[in-house]
Length: 234
Image 1 (cartoon, rainbow, N blue to C red):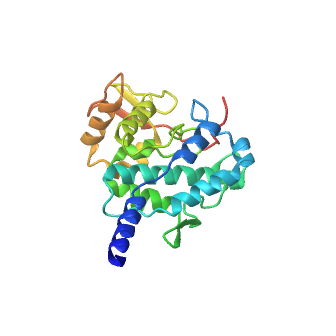
Image 2 (image 1 turned 90 degrees about the horizontal axis):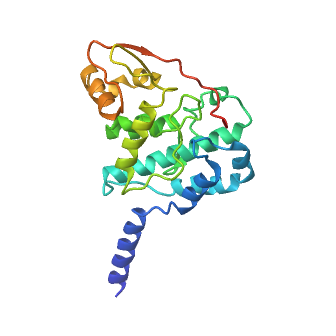
Image 3 (image 1 turned 60 degrees about the vertical axis):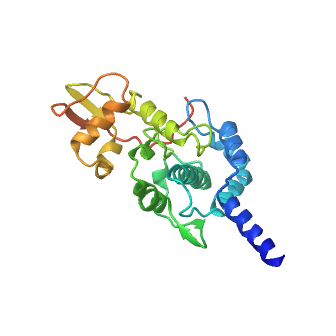
């Protein structure tokens, strides 16, 4: 009987590790993020204990080899975005996250018994999943950043939502101006060019997700300045 109970406990724990309750995080986003993806940091500070509990709950989960790629994407994108909000809130009010020294490389996030940074999550985990769309789901709090999704990324819809986030970003004229003869692209495409095998792949990626004009190998490409000022209410 003891061995059977032990086995059942192991199965339950294994199943639990695969299940993330996003109810609190989803509600937090709806309560603190506008329809335009702007975080109300004044309100965040009023409910900072909620955010701390949410980030702690993420830190208690440890993705394993049994997780699907989609599950890993959803978990780590949510993990990253919740912790970047927490970081900015810790130093608020400031005009830009760049006022925080080494903001993205500070190892102050609890995970698996150690401390990791936002850069660790982005570069050592998410980018290794080899899906460039993740760059348009990660929130940096900046005006030029992809906007923050107002609901949590869910396992069963993350692939669709990543496509939507990418299309929304590409078709936002404040972030990209796409034309067949001249295109002004977000610095994100320059910073993460290694995530595209070559120029042809980047062109194909942009054309797949852009809703209007298309680019080609002869298109002159310039990169827009990245506005690091805090994404504020407009």
